[in-house]
Image (cartoon, rainbow, N blue to C red; front, side, top):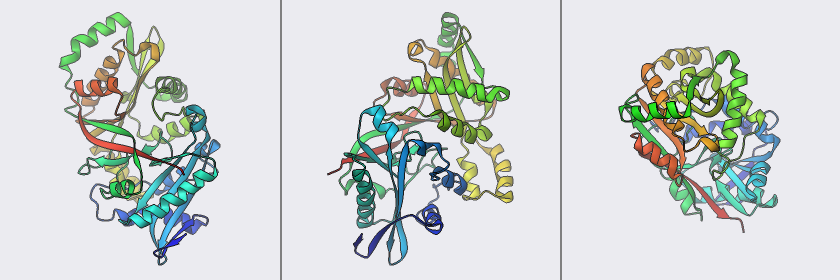
Length: 374
């Protein structure tokens, strides 16, 4: 594709893949908030032979060049599992990075959209990197904060790159910030009543029986979120990979199960915000950065609530309050002092009201965009 000397090419060679992975360092080189991902993790995410996402999805990656210089990138994705689950024909795009130029963005979108159209899709949606279970959404509010672990960040001008190219909002995703981890006196009596009435016990993940506990997480995760917009149940292989990746950074005292009469009915997983450590590693994984990792991990002050869900029949029992209470008490004991709860769908009133009631402030908003494929 040519226009204004812009050429968009499919990523084929190893050298092109390296350019694709390296490009964000150009876009964010002077941005104090960006957190460089580990390049080895991005390589794995994009590895169509090894990553379990590609057991049910197809992807192509593209680079935009102007005068032989890379000026943008995008990935186009068709996820059969999403379309079967939601009875849709939606193609996705992600891994989007671009210079401040609507023409370059337009060429990238058009190329990725054509890939989706050729596969029979009628809707083009993003950004998702590479599914709704990954980093997703365009940051549209909250640019003055660093992103927390497994959440995206982008320059403010990206809004214009989307909205001037015919995209409109499909859904907003919310992030709430709670300072003062451990301040829970307002709910102590309620928690006591729920414990007595529901016979609920809270236990941390058992690292010696990690694989068994991961099986429980899979079951609760896929039943708790099944009606959520955009949610697609993760396959067993995808969950296993995610568990393997998160195991080294998991804080066992903050990966909690709620059990009623010995049966697991809820799960809450809160991760230390390792982004403050990743910032020091600059995408590299080598003996020097591993030492940095070990040193700076002791200085993490914040958390992100990543997974919080109950089996359907236990949703309005108050068990969520007990899980939350335990997370707060344990988090404070471990020395953490703030927590981001993210992401929530904008219309998930139950969880948004809960996050506000416990002192969370809506401080970031992310947006999933879409447009019809002609």
